[in-house]
Length: 260
Image 1 (cartoon, rainbow, N blue to C red):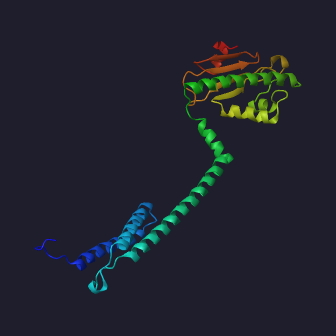
Image 2: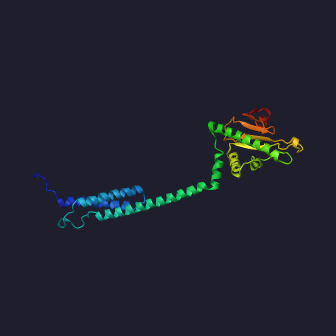
Image 3: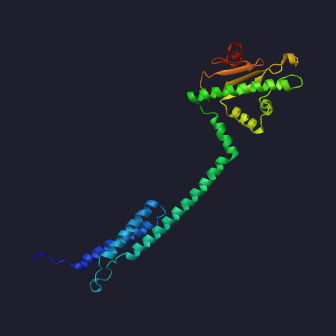
């Protein structure tokens, strides 16, 4: 030790160290009040542990050297801050878990609701399709139209007056011979979900004699779901299917290209 230097006052140095620990513990206690906010909870926990660790490893001034009003080591305050922070953080995490579990169950039930599913299906029917999806939609429309043509032929054979069915729902409800109710519902859903609108017109024209029985069946792309230039399909009582990519459904019947 330098003989010329001042002799350190250990009591003063310890008092200053105690004051710092006391201030840190007090800050931890104040922050712990807002521990329901996770970032502040972590800050309170860190400060509380630091203050408690310092209080345990740095000796306090002996009673004879402690002056009146000298700062305490802050250990009780640090422990109180830790208790408050940990309890609040545990409550917040538990509440978050309970809320998330309830919200997840509600979301699952909400998705299973028939009305909600119907709404999303309706929304999906308005979404534009890309080129690949549009090609698949055209293929599906042709398959549906072929099945409707087959049901029309069967309907006329089975009817007493030899006339065709004049409504899409009537065709679906009748179905092909041997079709189950589940298959009929599935077919109806394919039509409802299709990117095409199916319609029967000019049905059983003339004097409703079996010789004049007729129908005009069309499949027109829904816009804006189907892109411009999508195929329009049509068929009549002859059973021949045609298509055009410009014009209207009437142009399809008059000038459409026959399909195999």
